[in-house]
Image (cartoon, rainbow, N blue to C red):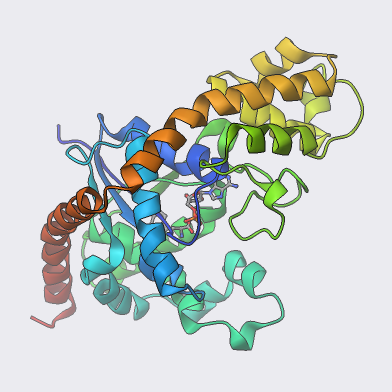
Length: 332
Ligand code: AMP
Ligand code: TRP
């Protein structure tokens, strides 16, 4: 039986934090032997909000070097940046004629990002989920490793695929499903556990970056907001304490432990002692990735070669899908 197809994307809009790593990149690595995997650095998505051109160029290499340092093998996986394969933009237009305005209007990420400033947001930010659907459907991917914030966008991709198939009476696009890392579906901010850890949070102390030094990691973990009680005894008491619950999740994913096992290990201990162990396991997990990625980042021609080969391999598949889609629509 042929392997299932996996697609996912990461925006080159800033450095990668542990939410991106555990929610997405670590899963990418887990899939690479058992699936046909296509991973894109989605620069077209990044420019839906202003990006400084020099920083964007830099961040494309930055994300790639972290992918590689985390263990993604460029021979096993197709790795490329989205704008090199123009079929992404082309399919986004074709699918934009299938998607409905009402569907886009329900997207909570757009509403959260623009708040009251809807009129000054870019049109690209609004139609962003259609481009995301195009990314996935171009490769007929059925599994999409993502964090929980992308669930609604995946539902939209399914709706678009389904409507296209119905409208043209074909069984052409596959309906993709999100795949999530159990304890890391949503890593929360270290400053305010009501918000997810995010590249755009104003406080640097809200997130741990893959490239943080060990001292920075220790400082951020020790400063992470918590209550002043002892560590929880069971899942129920953990769930009612969102800050500590988030730290327990992070400890669990770093050690590949169940949440129950982590809670049992630290039950009724002091939070400060738990935090010391937490900083250690985070450092053990990300220090090798960080070191390696800093080395890889310097070898621009190696990185560019990977992106070039990846784009050629992606284009091979994508151009075929575009041709078939146009035939179905009646353009050829
Ligand atoms: P982005 O940086 O927005 O392109 O996100 C890249 C991937 O990381 C996506 O699959 C997101 O769902 C995932 N992600 C981003 N933030 C978090 C978070 N705080 N917790 C878990 N996953 C996340
Ligand atoms: N929208 C995703 C994010 O912000 C990135 C992304 C773009 C993506 N295209 C995708 C994720 C396709 C999965 C599949 O995180």
